[in-house]
Image 1 (cartoon, rainbow, N blue to C red):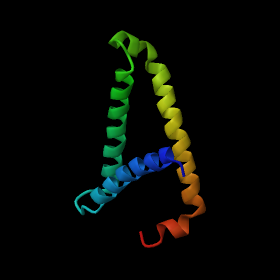
Image 2: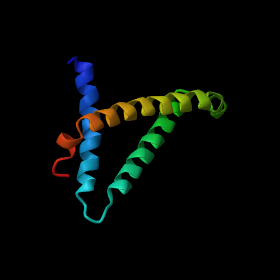
Image 3: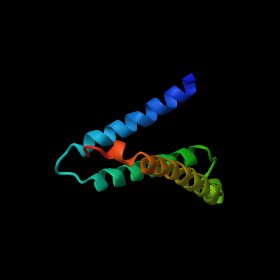
Length: 96
């Protein structure tokens, strides 16, 4: 695994581990953790999109392009992960 891939997966796993820690709170429902996770990444990506623009007008002009990129990337990742969980359901969900 390249250093880039290792760093990528280390960052992703750090977020997953944080969500898993929140899931240990008996007062929280898993859906609440998921909703917070999605809201946070949406907020971050809005900031990231803004950081690449010179003005609000430029961001507005690029909004649809950015939206399509993020939605398409999320859809691809979610489909891949769901397929993996379907294929490995018994092993992954044992003891859940």
